[in-house]
Amino acid sequence: MKNLKLRLTILTLVIFTSFNYSALSQVGIGTEPDDSAMLDISSTEKGLLTPRMTSAQKVAISSPAVGLIVFDTDESAFYFYDGSNWKKLVDDNSSNDYTGWADYIDGTYTSVSPLLLIANTKVILPNDANTIRDSQKPVDIASFYDPTTSKIIGRDGDGLNIMIEFKVRPTANTDTKITVTIDIGSPVGEIYTRDFITSKGVGVEHFYLSSFNAYTLNTWATNGGIVKIESDYPADVYDIRYVFTRTHKAR
Image (cartoon, rainbow, N blue to C red; front, side, top):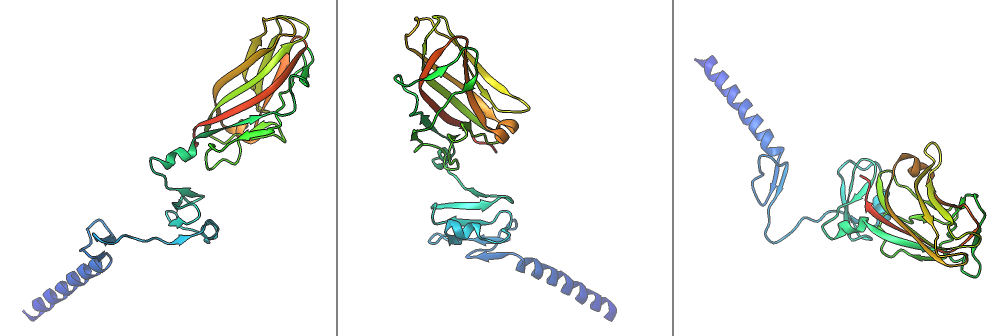
């Protein structure tokens, strides 16, 4: 009988200790913790305040854990660490921060001083981005276009709408064919080729506009994309403008 009582006492202590440890492993503040929660906070008067810091302090955190959350006081936004980068938590309104547009207008080639196309000679369509309107560009994009390299910047997985505008004036033949393409380099080369035939006569101004959706994967993301132009007869080109709109942000 004594042995039975001793065994029951030990079993009771084990069960109680196990229950007590389980209960202590969960924390409830203002409430009993829910079974599914390690930390359960309940209040109808106060909220939860996370660490607040500047952007510089955030990126200076050493070896941040995956899922770490802070409030960035410079951005007035919550950020979490995904294991590689700090990602901004967005709502229905701020999701628009990752779409947007910008345009880049050349200031070198004008009607008085045009780019002179030589027959059957492909050249880069120049755009020095003398005028830039980019107040509506996505918050995570510094620029869509680099005028020093004439490259449309690609981000692996982004979707873009690209609009290319310029004026062309044939100088030798009425029906001059103008070909515009985007060269993204090896191993792909030229893509999104467009042809345009002038028809209004020699010396008459024609307006070229091409708008198309593109995606910037792999080769484009590595090399960038350069707009090139060619004509089968001599022609003048001027008033060059690029407009880029991000239609999809890469995941």
